Image 1 (tube, one colour):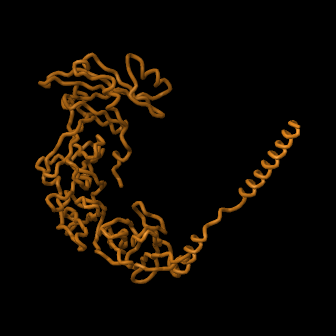
Image 2 (tube, rainbow, N blue to C red):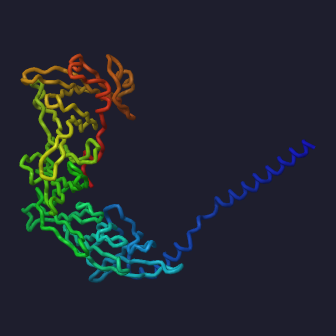
Image 3 (tube, rainbow, N blue to C red):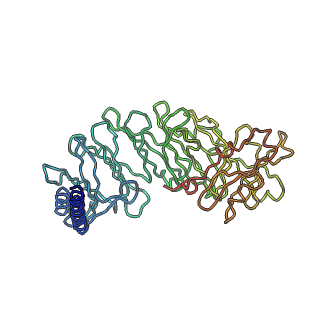
Length: 439
């Protein structure tokens, strides 16, 4: 009886497995079915696209030809199609809304230009829904045009329009709504660029006075948002100077006005030069505040080093009044792709000598007359790199696929209370965007 039961269960298992196997194989050869909603949307698009071609935005995060966003804040997203045709206003944004099970073309926003540059969806006016920010290319000109539309009433309303070279959405006044920071050229090619802030206050569009940049807008390389010392929101704009330096303009709301905080500082330390390497503002210590770099030339240890000097970086955060707050010191090896944080108590007396795979750190006495080697950092490659990383009392700082980074402490490190953990915790690889800065 027991044997018959076992045989019956085995037979059922085989039949079930066979059935599952047949179903799985059949399903493998079936093409995925697109939803009825997709077919309805595609049908509406095909009907509206007569005489048009797709024209997706060329920069920014939203580069799809068809995008979706809840423009009017009713909880149901609209679908936006970016297209191009002939005529005086060749660029069109087609907005589709869903009604019951069908999609209908609700609106078409037409404008001039040769193509869509950038599109963003942000809350600017505080009304339910998001505003549509559309940047358009104008022929081959550097200057572009943008329009901002609100859909709070159910239909589009153009809040404002502006010309720009670069723009950025940000909340600088901390009211929960975004503003639009626009960077564009000055009155002629020899004049520095200007920054303007657009926003909505109590239902009315407000435009700040023009605020100067430190150079032509064509030299702009990088724009990021962050915070000043004390937590004030700010925009950090890095531009090249004579192809050998980076100058950073820092824009924020101070006393209710849009200002360039960095130009109010008398120190002029925002320009940082390191041969052909650019050093950009960044949150180097990850405390939520963006630091700016000030490069300091290290004193050469020997005569041969004078032709190949190394640099120390003093990182500082700006306050809203333009004064500086020192944050940390570091030695950045941009060629090798790593940096080491240094103790502020003695960092200004450090010099570095590079020889082969070794970067030797020397400390000068208070009078600057003599120096002593305190530790070394090694970048080791090759098949024997693991062995070399631990020989002669070395210890490992970090490993990646091709390199082992190691260090060695000299006797003189004891007087500075430098430990293995200090070097291990202070050693970092450089993020790639620090080298290029391009956005």
